[in-house]
Image (cartoon, rainbow, N blue to C red; front, side, top):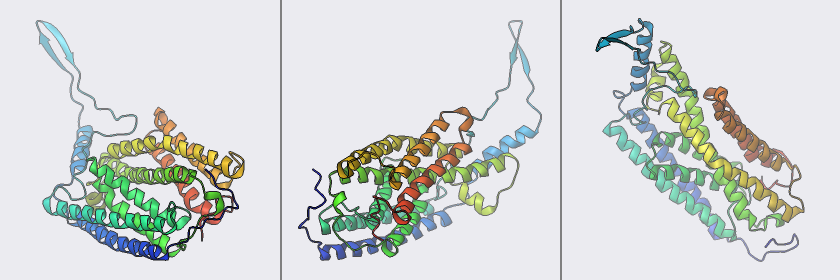
Length: 367
């Protein structure tokens, strides 16, 4: 049941729990930093002798293409001539190439794999501390921990790590995502504890509703999954450029070779990003609908083109265009990837820009 605007809550802020939450968040940042260095070690000290699969696959094809086309052979079977045409490998509509995935950040060796396992263990430890900080923040005011931008940030980054660890638990080959994820989680928490920090306090009256748990929680989950898809899309663009350069006989730099060879093939990254975005898009649709229902309950109208509502809709349209583009032969590969990044940019502006720089009914940033 939604409380009226004039209702006052007797619940007081528990400063002790709020301080515990702050301590846990800082502690999580310290452990995330250790995990970051472990991921760096995995990339740096993983064997480089086992990379080169993409280069070998594409260079061999390029050399074959430069030579003469295989001759059409004719065999006789029972006095009848049989025409055997050579097999032709055609690139798919999405621009995929028939190349193997990279061996991973550790390069396929035991030492690099050890650093990777240490990095994951530290990530799990940091995540548990981080989650404890979010729960303590919620307990300090006895409500959901996303009443302002600081709380939204610490919860969002926790959910992003949850998505990553869940994919690992499902035995998905996403360890390549770890370094990028932990880096951005540290940046997100750094912004939260410095620029966006807000003392633990009660909600404004309009947010006293069970829809807070439904609408905002799904928005946070969608954002975390969209982020994972955006990382995959960005890496796809780099890997696709690398593969294209090799295919055309170019020679990428040593650093690019060592780094990009360990990532999955561009086709795998493209497929991963598409599946992630497609899976969460229906939930984003529900998020907007839930927000409209909550708006009617709180403000007496379903839709008022408030800046937050407008940019949520723009984000929905951008991702809808991306998914439609993937179903259209002329808009696959890099074109669709650019559209996916634009869509995620819309989500980011809706996340930061609208809350901080634009005034409206959703101005609960607390900064």
